Image 1 (cartoon, rainbow, N blue to C red):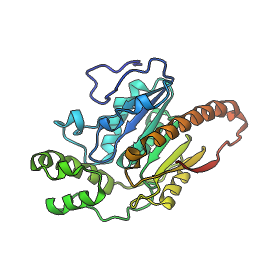
Image 2 (image 1 turned 135 degrees about the vertical axis):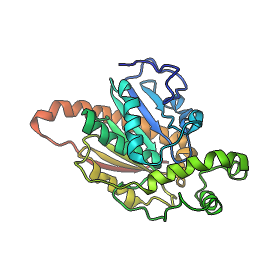
Image 3 (image 1 turned 90 degrees about the horizontal axis):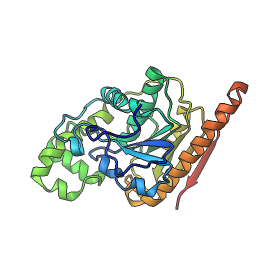
Image 4 (image 1 turned 180 degrees about the vertical axis):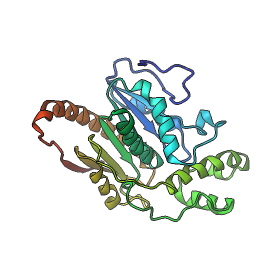
Length: 278
């Protein structure tokens, strides 16, 4: 198993190595974003956590590659990339599209490799079985698609107003939205790891009820953490988000150790918590 990320590995963009880390946190960005979203996270988390910002094909430093347009093949490719680095406790964090990807990744790893993260943090996305309230936009004409992107406020206006940049980024955004909008949930047994659902108090696209639905996807402890801000609260409330990420991972590691001790008795440690983070 690997201890360090070779420079030739295009899947991860580490800001620095946390040599004393006992847990690996793989982070997945939202549609149209890339691993740079998590560049500052290593300095904002304890040294016991090594942050692995994941660079998806077609994004960031991999812009020359073709992006995936369906989630299932991306899940399989991502799992293959992660496998050499799952030799110590690991957790998954994803925002919006990234949340959906991490959820299906956790299920895929359990199904095909019998590996489970110590924690799954799903941010800015409702429970996977809840139908999207919004109409599909990935196949709209350019002008209408760009107008929808402006309304979402997740793509900088400097990009949307630059024809040359748009020519590069629009296919990536369409591919990302296609993955979300063509996704179909398949019911299977709940995960056995704790799940924390992060949401924005002013998020017009993900309601509290939709976050609450994640509770059904685990037999372990579940928590909802609400932050000030809209759908992109992970940018505007980053310090609070990082504080809660650290707390959730610490709780998950303790739960993991406790579960090992009581597993034979069949005792369930599942519980639920909710908290609004200042």
